[in-house]
Length: 116
Image 1 (cartoon, rainbow, N blue to C red):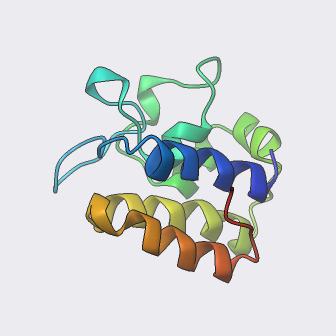
Image 2: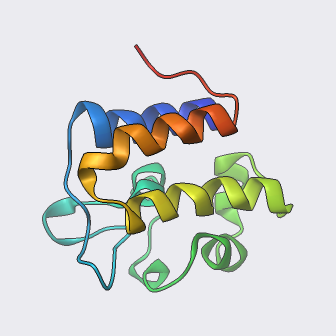
């Protein structure tokens, strides 16, 4: 999965389908109640997900589950890990009403296209 594919999935989940946050103001889940997901959780296929991933940052999760590096087509360099961490931050720290705006800024930062 390249960055554009990942962004498209998150955009669809957050903006098009308007899914809620996957937690509360203190904690978000890669997979939460009612199958709600954070932005990074949206990208993790069911076959690679483990409940042990919860309570970890995106970069810690990638180092603990290296199979995800191949799936996400990323390396452990700061730019690749920053991509996932920035997605995680938008989900965790912004109200859902600001997601479209923040994801648009994210797209500009990473030279991505907004899906039509």
